[in-house]
Image (cartoon, rainbow, N blue to C red):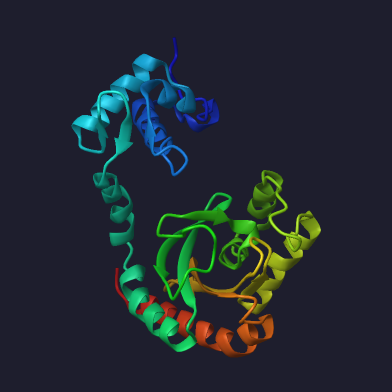
Length: 267
């Protein structure tokens, strides 16, 4: 019986260059989440589409390498799994440059500051500087949010080609997160185009009631957008006018400084 993960389609198998066993291992790692922090062999097999035998081989391999631990029945990730994410963060000098400037920005504006990159239909947080909790979810490095309804996401989506942007929009699941959530294609495209034209984006309570944020792009020496930076606040104490008039200039200045440092740093 084939134990290929159900989420891996034939279109993602470029001949001999595709290492199926490695892809299966990543699928097993991704099956663990906040909703499933520990799983039995059967649960892993069901979530990944693998046979029990296939899932068992991968689980035991990951356990031998120290990425998983087990009490004999339940498997769970170990802290060593963080090495995989830190390898990405440490390979990107932008985060070393950005963190002290983000901390200084947070001290000045008294709001949380975040940096994120685009991954498919989501943004992934790569750096967070907190002041206090602003969302009901506990956002941290590695957390994901839907790109089309976040200021960070719209800034990053604005850099895509029209063809790529429309392809992602066509694959976008629609969810009415709040009464402010924009769902129709025309308005979403218009707001992304606005972000592209003005060089920043403000989102007002589209993802969560009470949450407002403004974001700006971070660019490398070639002028390419490599990430986005934002400030988030609570609508009951930070109005959109205040965000735009008082905090946005601080955000743009910090984004320009980080981008300028990236532009002068040698690989």
